[in-house]
Amino acid sequence: MPELPEVETTCRGIAPHTEGKEVKAIVVRQPKLRWVVPNSIQEMVGQRINKVARRAKYVLLETDIGTTMVHLGMSGSLRVVDDSLAPDKHDHVDIILDTGKALRLHDPRRFGAVLWTQESIDTHKLIGHLGPEPLTDAFDVDYLVGCAARRSVSVKQFIMDAQVVVGVGNIYASESLFMAGISPKRAANKVSKKRYALLTQCIKQVLARAIEQGGTTLRDFVQAEGKPGYFKQELNVYGRAGEPCNTCGELVVQLKQGQRSTFYCGSCQR
Image (cartoon, rainbow, N blue to C red; front, side):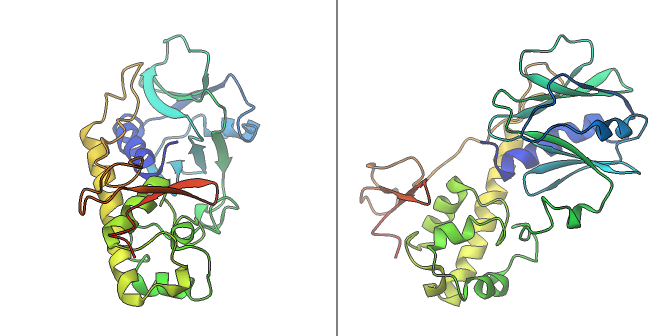
């Protein structure tokens, strides 16, 4: 599933090819995605894309009169192609630009979304309730400690809650907790402020590194087969159950938390 670093990589990849460009047409081949693509999306035609931005895992195409919100779902990707290129089976939406290129959504599982809004993104019903971006100053130790005060859920589930902070997916939660030396089983309200200070920095470091590595493996978004270059993960615990910990040599353990697999080292993480 595309997570925050992959979505950020997508934004950075398509921005040079879309910002400042006029939308000449929008072709919707399959409107039945996670939510039906609204007819109002056609209001974007004739508008110039002023900025490509991201909030949580939404790609935002901002114009003077509104914003197109794109979610990649479980398996989606955005790429820039020649608008004359024949679509594949799962190419559901094209945003055709005045350059002869098209921003094309490919989504085999159709869990993605293409929406149009003229309201402020900050108050939109899909975004307004979300927590802060993890790489901003709004996400700091005081904020995290305040959120955790009455939460007895495990700290891993806590930091994966998008209403607490966006973008800390399963991989990043496991890796951040390992880096901070915190057991994923510990209750959120049983973690000290000192350890939350370290965890806050670890989350920022893990996500920043993932974005940086995603950028270094970025494929050419103009090519038909172009897709975001998912970063080459240098993982300490995630997906390494039964393998020796890179730090202490003890075996990495796997367990289920909230229907998700958790990986950790019982020796390094307390």
